[in-house]
Image (cartoon, rainbow, N blue to C red; front, side, top):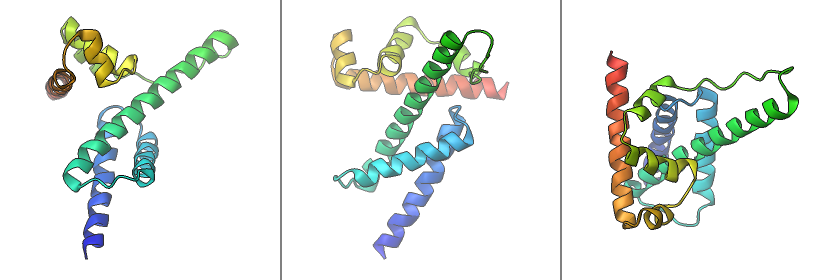
Length: 159
């Protein structure tokens, strides 16, 4: 009986993760692939996480995987444009101007924190070392910036 409950929980989380990624700008097909990758990583992991720790882990892995995919796609498009020249124009993936506008509304410190973590792909410990703060402070600041971005995005969607 517990296995059926666990399977149901996993199915719900798959739908949640997919919606989360689509709401963050991923195309539907990409979100499906990333959710599948998250489950593969989860199955390959020898550690069994309780449900209360499983959800945050899966969201983090999904977001990181999406960012990796996005960066890889951007790099590929930049290389193709650079080396194949203007004769073959590759349409760039549409950027979400809402995210750009929301990012512009963050302070320089908040933007720097996001750049270190997501563009430079530094670990929490590396970000903490660079900013000369504790890792727990980095986690809290990232959490606050994510919430702030979410509020800004929600306000801009409402009009």
